[in-house]
Length: 335
Ligand code: ASP
Image 1 (cartoon, rainbow, N blue to C red):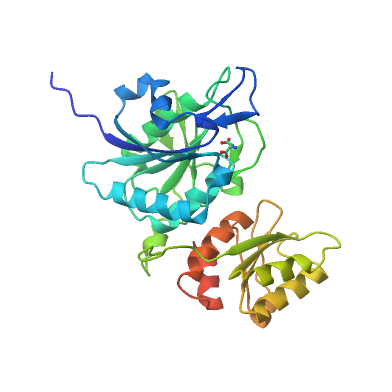
Image 2 (cartoon, rainbow, N blue to C red):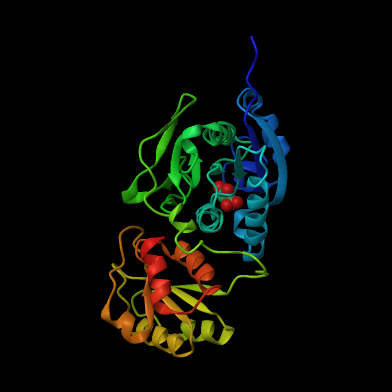
C-alpha cells in the first residue's frame, strides 16, 4: 500500500521553559534555557509519525528577554516560511511568560490560511513529568490538522487550543496556566485527536481585511509604548517619566472597567497634550473597558477586552500607521 507523504511543518525555536534545564529533576522553577530546538525534537520521536519537521532556531532566550526588534524578526521569518508552498504549517516553541504577546503580535501581522501554533511548557525539559514533550506533539498535531486552517494564530498547552486574541497566562506555575477567560478555549487535543469546538470571533481574518492588516514593510523598529499600573493613591511621576523618556503611546492598567484614579487622570491628560496616544485597559483580567465621554474630550482610547500587555502590542502596531484616535479606537473595538 502506498503511504501518503506526511505534512511538512516548520518548527521555529525561540527558547523558554520548554527549552530549559535545571540542576535536578525535581527543580521546576529555577532553570536556564539551554536546549536547542533540535534537542526538543529528540525527546518526542513520536512526532516523526505525524509530520516531517524542518527545524530552525530564531533565537533561544527566556521570553522575558524578547524585544520588539526580535518580534519583528520572528514575524518576518514566519511570513517567509508560510510563503513556501511545501510548508503546511508553523509551530513556534516559546517561553510562557510573554507568549500571549508574541501570539497576538503574529496574529495581527501574519495573514495566512496555514496554521501557526505557539507552544510552551510550564516545567523545564529536565523535570520529572515535564509537560513540554506532549505539548510539542500536540502542537504539531494541531498544525497538521485541516480544521486548524483559517483559525489564525493559536496557542496550545495542557491539551487545550486557544485563540491568540483571547489567551493569557493566568497562573504562575500550574500546568493549566493558560486561559481564554470568558471566551473559553477554541478546542482540545484529546488522546491524539484534535477537536475544535468554536471559531475565533476576532483577530484573523479581520486582521487581513478590509484594510490589509499591519504591514511590516520597511519597518525597522516599533514605536515605544509603556504600560503603567493604576492603584489607590497613585502619583503622576510615572506618567511624567514616560513622557520624558519620549514614549509614543501609553497603556494604563486602569481600575475596574477602565476607571482612573485622580493622578492617573492628570498623568494621561498631560501625556495626551504631548501627542502621546493613551489607551485605558483594565487591571481586572477580564471583561470590556467601557468607552467614556472623556476619551473623546482628552483624546484617549479604550482597550475593549484586550488586556494591558496585548493593548500595548496593538497600540505599537497602530502607531506605525496613524495617531488618529478614531481609527485606533476602531481597531481596538474590532481586532
Ligand atoms: N521564564 C519562562 C519564559 O521564558 C517561563 C516559561 O517559559 O514558562 O517565559
